[in-house]
Length: 261
Image 1: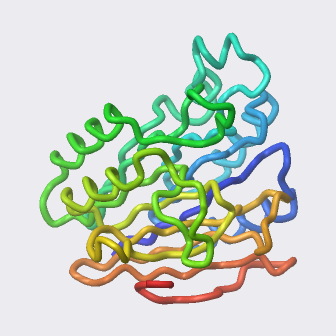
Image 2: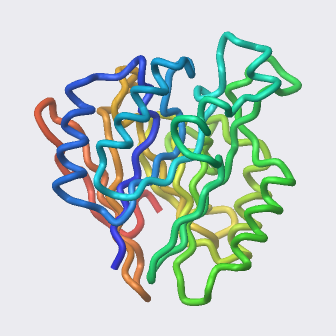
């Protein structure tokens, strides 16, 4: 059995210190096998915010796998954004932007959906480029048989049922189809500050897409701060519990193998 705490959109620099303290206390008490962070650890990617995010990660007693979000690229220093957009990430968070973690039950692979620029004005929109997809498919091919395959990215690949016009990562449809072919069980994402889990109803097959709301920031969008507790048992459907901040602690909202499917 493997337990993963899926947290996202921490937005250090626009965070609630009480929620951060409560999250550290909860995670260190529960000691999940892995803490997976699906992007936006900072608000403006300043050195101060990165230092805060780094101290948070260092305070956790579980292994951490993190991928960057659009807010983790320099927002104001354009020369750095174009020349070395992940310098602060690699110096503070992790030496890579697409990490891998595995145990005897799961293999978790990060994919970087953030981009330094795009052919439109909204640079917050993500994309799973062909090279990124080919790279993760190659890594998935090397995963030993019998391990549940999980992919972590920042931008959503499937919209919430009640938000059909949600902006998804570029090439979301192609990416989901390719991940289905690679036998991926779960895709963990953030960005939209919304909590839900569902299968692709059009294709009818493929991974369960699990979205996490903002876990520690004050930038709420009509729902509380949340994170997901995911339990993976060999040969069984994963169990997902969405946990919400009550103002003084964390409380389970829902528990099911398929939420909203």
